[in-house]
Length: 174
Image 1: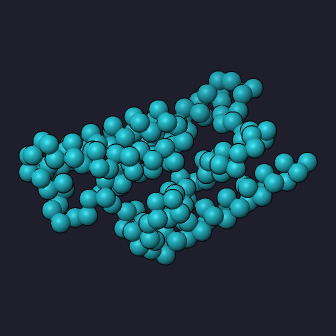
Image 2: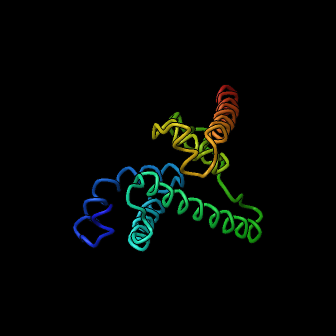
Image 3: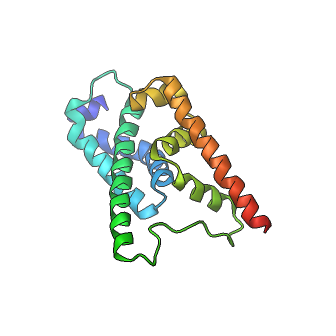
């Protein structure tokens, strides 16, 4: 990142090639929409370009990059909630968000549906800790909270997932 910050244009291509797949995977899990994740990936790296002058040499790049990506995902989810709320007022016969498809036998599908129902802070902590393998110290540093607060967010996410997936088991058993 220091090379890019100092004006080496080819350094950006290297950064993008190296980190885009990981960032896109994170974004896809956060927003659960491939096209939106792709848009957010582009927005994230556009922010990197715009913010390169503010990057502090010696700062770890991955947490800085993932903070930008997480903020983009949060903004998109917040915007989507507003759109969904407006749409539900316009058409009260259609729920704002679809319920998980009970006929889908795929556990992955159900897990992704359950993840989407988590509070964004809890979903982020779960994805970063369990999928990305981040420590609670790293998650805390990313969000500007203590490691204990990051652990609590993840724990609340795990509990809600257990509850949601437990309800799924009951529905499937019927």
